[in-house]
Amino acid sequence: MMAWLMGVPGLSPAQLQQRLQQGDLSLIDVNSAPPRQGLIPGARWIDPTQLGPQDLPTNRDQTLVFYCANPFCRKAPRAARQARQWGHTDVAVLAAGIEGWQRAGLPLS
Image 1 (cartoon, one colour):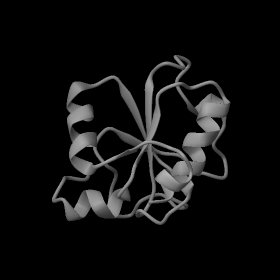
Image 2: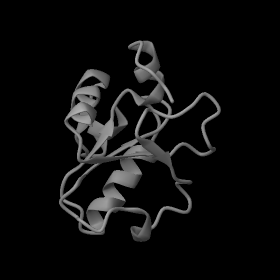
Image 3: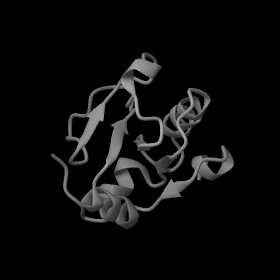
């Protein structure tokens, strides 16, 4: 919901899972604290207050997908918008957040 309101494309858990299987994307968890329950496989956690251009791929055309807790969390859409300002062209968020990923029965690492 926040992604749409903030003008950032949102992916469903099923869409993200399909994109992960295709490869060539960077998945970034921007929840406030390192995840206790685990990460979506292939993701890495970055403290959203410390996110900088150095944390993102140098290839600005590579797909970036950010996620946070749930559809009402603003951290992922904010990070996605910031990545766009840094010149990244293919940016999206997991619209349902990690809660939606888990509700869909998808694995954590």
